[in-house]
Image 1 (cartoon, rainbow, N blue to C red):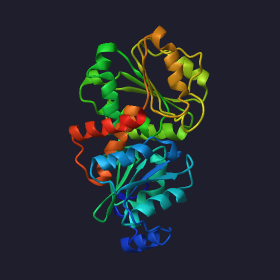
Image 2 (tube, one colour; image 1 turned 30 degrees about the vertical axis):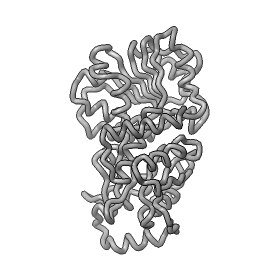
Image 3 (cartoon, rainbow, N blue to C red; image 1 turned 90 degrees about the vertical axis):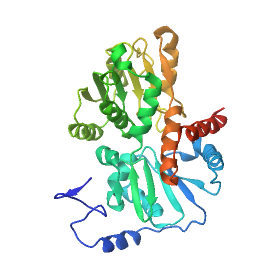
Image 4 (spheres, one colour; image 1 turned 60 degrees about the horizontal axis):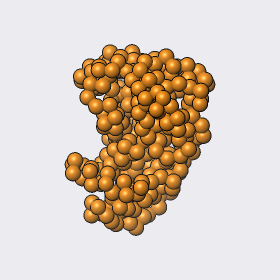
Length: 342
C-alpha cells in the first residue's frame, strides 16, 4: 500500500483531509450502472470460459439464493489502473452489486484501488492483494483468501508432515498472488514437518520477485527462499532437475490458460515421486500434460487446479454472501460442482 508518513491513504485513514470529499470525488469519477438483481462479479481475463458460469447458478439454488446472478468482468493482464477502479466503483456504489471474486488481477487491482477500500484483512495487507471484494454495511472490504484456499488445497495433496517425512522441497514457477499465498501458507505452518526446507520462486519479471521479497522480509521463517529471475524454459528445466525427489513442482504462471505454453520444455525431467501441481484446471494445460507424460516412468502425482478452484470460490462466495461455510455446506457445494465438471 502507498503510505504517507505513518498512515494509509484512503478511508482506512487519511492525513490529507476530508474523507467525505474524497468519497464524493471518487464516486463521481466513474459511471455506475444501477443493477436490478443481486449481482456477484467475477473479475478475470476470460471469465465466460470458466466452469463457474455454470456452477454458480446451481450453488445459488443449493443455498437458497437463486436470485443472485453472476457477471463476468474481463480485463487485460496488467490492465490500466482506471479499469480496475471502474470495476471496484461499480461494486462500491451500486446497492445490488454484492461483491466480486478476483483472479489474475489480485495484486494489480489492489495497487490501483487501495484508497477505495474501508477495510483490508491482515492477509490482504501482508500480500498486497485482494481476491475477494465484499460489503459489510457501508464498508467496502478486501480480503486475500488465497492463503486459505491454497493452504486447504496443498494440505489435501500432501497430508500432514509431508515435507518432514520426504525431504521434498518446492519449486514454483510464477510469483503472482496464488504463488505468494502458497508460500505464505507454508511459512505460517506451525509444525516444522509441514514446512519445506527450501522454496524456489521463479518469475519472468523482476517486479513480482521484489514484491515477494518485501512480503517475506516482514515475516519470520526458517524456509530458505531463492528468488530466480528467468524467462527461459530450458533454464527452468535445469532448476527442476536439481530439485530432490518428492518435491512439489507448481505452475502458477497462468501459462496454459491466460497465455500459451508452459514454463518448462518437453525435455524437462520432473524429479522422482514429485507432486506436479498445475494451478489451472482449464485451458491447454501444457504443463499438466508434460507431467502426465512422465507420470508412470517418474512415479509422479499429477494434479490440476480443480480443488483450488473449489476452495477459492467457496471462500469468496461465503465472504460476499455472509455465509457460514460449514464442512457440510462445503461438501454439498463440491458435489454440485462435480456435476458440471463431468
